[in-house]
Amino acid sequence: MIKSEKSNKVNSIKEEFANNNGLFFADHSNIKAVQSVVVRDRLYEVEATLMILKNTLASIAASESFKEIDLSSILKGPTSVIASHKDLVATAKVLKDIIREFDILKLKGGIIDGKLVSASDLNILATLPSREVLISQIVSGLASPMYMLVSVLNNLPQKLVMTLSAIQKEKEKVS
Image 1: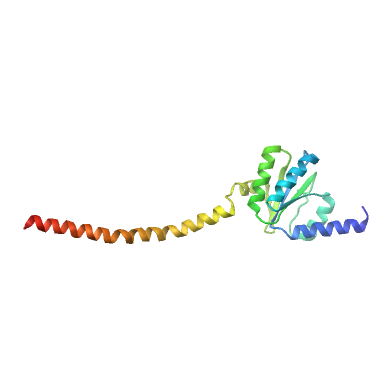
Image 2: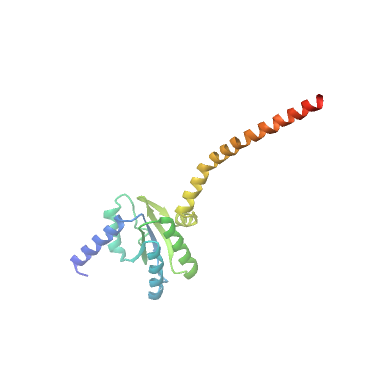
Protein backbone atom coordinates (compact mmCIF):
# COMPACT_ATOMS: atom_id res chain seq x y z
CA MET A 1 0.00 0.00 0.00
CA ILE A 2 1.28 3.48 -0.87
CA LYS A 3 1.81 5.89 2.02
CA SER A 4 -1.04 8.18 0.89
CA GLU A 5 -3.38 5.19 0.65
CA LYS A 6 -2.40 4.15 4.19
CA SER A 7 -2.96 7.69 5.41
CA ASN A 8 -6.41 7.80 3.79
CA LYS A 9 -7.28 4.39 5.25
CA VAL A 10 -6.16 5.48 8.76
CA ASN A 11 -8.27 8.64 8.42
CA SER A 12 -11.35 6.64 7.41
CA ILE A 13 -10.79 4.25 10.35
CA LYS A 14 -10.44 7.23 12.72
CA GLU A 15 -13.67 8.65 11.36
CA GLU A 16 -15.40 5.31 11.95
CA PHE A 17 -13.97 5.19 15.49
CA ALA A 18 -15.29 8.69 16.17
CA ASN A 19 -18.80 8.28 14.71
CA ASN A 20 -20.38 5.42 16.64
CA ASN A 21 -22.08 4.52 19.90
CA GLY A 22 -19.60 1.78 20.71
CA LEU A 23 -16.99 -0.53 19.28
CA PHE A 24 -16.64 -4.29 19.61
CA PHE A 25 -13.35 -6.05 18.83
CA ALA A 26 -13.54 -9.69 17.77
CA ASP A 27 -11.21 -12.44 16.61
CA HIS A 28 -12.37 -13.50 13.14
CA SER A 29 -9.82 -16.27 12.47
CA ASN A 30 -12.53 -18.87 11.66
CA ILE A 31 -14.65 -16.70 9.36
CA LYS A 32 -15.11 -17.51 5.69
CA ALA A 33 -16.06 -15.02 2.96
CA VAL A 34 -19.65 -16.32 2.72
CA GLN A 35 -20.09 -16.09 6.47
CA SER A 36 -18.74 -12.54 6.55
CA VAL A 37 -21.50 -11.53 4.15
CA VAL A 38 -24.11 -13.07 6.47
CA VAL A 39 -22.55 -11.31 9.48
CA ARG A 40 -22.50 -7.97 7.66
CA ASP A 41 -26.15 -8.39 6.61
CA ARG A 42 -27.27 -9.12 10.18
CA LEU A 43 -25.27 -6.23 11.56
CA TYR A 44 -26.69 -3.93 8.88
CA GLU A 45 -30.19 -4.65 10.24
CA VAL A 46 -29.21 -3.09 13.61
CA GLU A 47 -27.19 -0.26 11.99
CA ALA A 48 -23.77 -1.68 12.77
CA THR A 49 -20.81 -2.36 10.52
CA LEU A 50 -18.13 -5.04 10.42
CA MET A 51 -14.63 -3.93 9.45
CA ILE A 52 -11.83 -6.40 8.92
CA LEU A 53 -8.73 -4.23 9.30
CA LYS A 54 -4.99 -4.55 9.36
CA ASN A 55 -3.82 -4.32 12.95
CA THR A 56 -1.11 -1.80 12.19
CA LEU A 57 -3.57 0.63 10.58
CA ALA A 58 -6.13 0.03 13.33
CA SER A 59 -3.45 0.61 16.00
CA ILE A 60 -2.42 3.91 14.44
CA ALA A 61 -6.04 5.07 14.18
CA ALA A 62 -6.82 3.88 17.73
CA SER A 63 -3.77 5.62 19.23
CA GLU A 64 -4.89 8.88 17.62
CA SER A 65 -8.60 8.43 18.44
CA PHE A 66 -8.30 6.97 21.96
CA LYS A 67 -5.21 8.57 23.47
CA GLU A 68 -5.84 7.25 27.00
CA ILE A 69 -6.75 3.67 25.97
CA ASP A 70 -4.12 1.05 25.20
CA LEU A 71 -5.49 -1.38 22.61
CA SER A 72 -2.21 -3.16 21.91
CA SER A 73 -3.37 -6.35 23.67
CA ILE A 74 -6.66 -6.40 21.75
CA LEU A 75 -5.20 -5.60 18.33
CA LYS A 76 -3.12 -8.79 18.14
CA GLY A 77 -3.96 -11.55 15.71
CA PRO A 78 -6.91 -11.42 13.32
CA THR A 79 -9.12 -8.61 14.63
CA SER A 80 -12.41 -7.30 13.34
CA VAL A 81 -14.00 -4.08 14.53
CA ILE A 82 -17.78 -3.90 14.80
CA ALA A 83 -19.07 -0.34 15.09
CA SER A 84 -22.54 0.15 16.51
CA HIS A 85 -24.16 3.27 15.08
CA LYS A 86 -27.49 3.14 16.90
CA ASP A 87 -28.27 0.60 19.62
CA LEU A 88 -25.39 -1.05 21.50
CA VAL A 89 -27.60 -3.67 23.10
CA ALA A 90 -29.10 -4.73 19.77
CA THR A 91 -25.62 -5.00 18.25
CA ALA A 92 -24.40 -7.06 21.23
CA LYS A 93 -27.42 -9.37 20.90
CA VAL A 94 -26.79 -9.89 17.18
CA LEU A 95 -23.12 -10.64 17.84
CA LYS A 96 -24.07 -13.10 20.59
CA ASP A 97 -26.49 -14.85 18.20
CA ILE A 98 -23.85 -15.01 15.45
CA ILE A 99 -21.28 -16.44 17.86
CA ARG A 100 -23.77 -19.04 19.12
CA GLU A 101 -24.96 -19.98 15.64
CA PHE A 102 -21.74 -20.02 13.62
CA ASP A 103 -18.91 -20.00 16.19
CA ILE A 104 -16.86 -17.78 13.88
CA LEU A 105 -16.21 -14.74 16.06
CA LYS A 106 -14.70 -14.45 19.52
CA LEU A 107 -15.15 -11.18 21.36
CA LYS A 108 -11.92 -9.63 22.64
CA GLY A 109 -13.29 -6.44 24.18
CA GLY A 110 -14.80 -3.14 23.25
CA ILE A 111 -14.98 0.58 23.77
CA ILE A 112 -18.15 2.09 25.19
CA ASP A 113 -18.38 5.77 26.13
CA GLY A 114 -14.62 6.12 25.70
CA LYS A 115 -13.84 3.32 28.15
CA LEU A 116 -12.33 -0.08 27.47
CA VAL A 117 -14.63 -2.96 28.45
CA SER A 118 -13.92 -6.67 28.59
CA ALA A 119 -15.54 -9.42 26.53
CA SER A 120 -17.47 -10.60 29.61
CA ASP A 121 -18.93 -7.09 30.01
CA LEU A 122 -20.04 -7.21 26.39
CA ASN A 123 -21.74 -10.57 27.02
CA ILE A 124 -23.60 -9.01 29.96
CA LEU A 125 -24.64 -6.15 27.68
CA ALA A 126 -26.13 -8.72 25.28
CA THR A 127 -28.39 -10.06 28.05
CA LEU A 128 -29.99 -6.67 28.75
CA PRO A 129 -33.54 -6.10 27.53
CA SER A 130 -33.95 -3.87 24.50
CA ARG A 131 -34.27 -0.11 24.85
CA GLU A 132 -38.01 -0.22 24.23
CA VAL A 133 -38.54 -2.86 26.95
CA LEU A 134 -36.49 -0.84 29.44
CA ILE A 135 -38.49 2.30 28.68
CA SER A 136 -41.79 0.44 29.12
CA GLN A 137 -40.56 -0.98 32.45
CA ILE A 138 -39.71 2.52 33.67
CA VAL A 139 -43.06 3.91 32.54
CA SER A 140 -44.99 1.09 34.22
CA GLY A 141 -42.91 1.58 37.39
CA LEU A 142 -43.78 5.27 37.41
CA ALA A 143 -47.46 4.65 36.63
CA SER A 144 -47.95 1.92 39.25
CA PRO A 145 -48.24 4.28 42.29
CA MET A 146 -50.77 6.39 40.41
CA TYR A 147 -52.92 3.34 39.65
CA MET A 148 -52.76 2.31 43.30
CA LEU A 149 -53.84 5.80 44.41
CA VAL A 150 -56.79 5.77 42.00
CA SER A 151 -57.75 2.33 43.29
CA VAL A 152 -57.67 3.47 46.92
CA LEU A 153 -59.66 6.61 46.12
CA ASN A 154 -62.26 4.57 44.23
CA ASN A 155 -62.67 2.21 47.19
CA LEU A 156 -63.26 4.98 49.78
CA PRO A 157 -66.86 5.85 48.73
CA GLN A 158 -67.71 2.15 48.53
CA LYS A 159 -66.38 1.56 52.07
CA LEU A 160 -68.31 4.61 53.33
CA VAL A 161 -71.56 3.30 51.84
CA MET A 162 -70.97 -0.16 53.33
CA THR A 163 -70.19 1.32 56.76
CA LEU A 164 -73.32 3.53 56.70
CA SER A 165 -75.39 0.53 55.61
CA ALA A 166 -74.04 -1.55 58.50
CA ILE A 167 -74.82 1.26 60.96
CA GLN A 168 -78.37 1.55 59.58
CA LYS A 169 -78.96 -2.20 59.97
CA GLU A 170 -77.58 -2.09 63.50
CA LYS A 171 -79.97 0.76 64.42
CA GLU A 172 -82.90 -1.10 62.86
CA LYS A 173 -82.15 -4.13 65.05
CA VAL A 174 -82.04 -1.98 68.20
CA SER A 175 -85.37 -0.26 67.49
